[in-house]
Length: 250
Image (tube, rainbow, N blue to C red; front, top):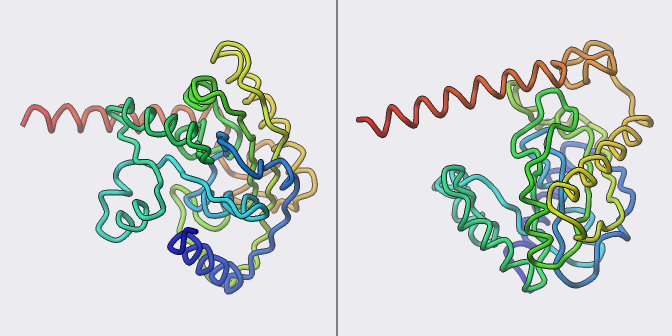
């Protein structure tokens, strides 16, 4: 029994109902009823993790998400994240969080991972880090590819929150488990290809507003292309590194 997590999900469902969010979920049966698994989720908005947690509730399970350390340092969100047993990630020293994730997987937990590491400003599937594949191989558990579409309309990087009654449709697809076979780079590429195909399929039945900021350029929206978004991310990364070095020099 996890009363805190259950209560948080209950509150989230009330909020979703207030917002009028319209969920369409497929593939829930691919969430294992027991045993460890890496839940790999695409990253388009700040609330992806709340929506990704819905399919596992079919079998009364919870996801332990890997999230940046800054969220745990916050005096409001920190206690909540710790009580839900999520895993803090220090981008400057990720070895400990990796070990914690593998340990949880071996204990039979579902561990949520964003293989893209950061929000995709293009809303396309970015290149993947190999962490999801490596931890799945080391723990001997499958990877469950999960794709969400529409979350970027609620709250994403560079745009205001839309937390009122927007009646936003959000589509979620859970793919078949991928066995932890082969070297990490090959498994990562297989996961990337699978999730890209899943996203394309999910987008087919979704109504996209021409020129909208949340619509990929490929579909007629004003979001940056994947190449343009990569350049923006690189600039942000360089700025963070410079600030980190400047702080060290103080």
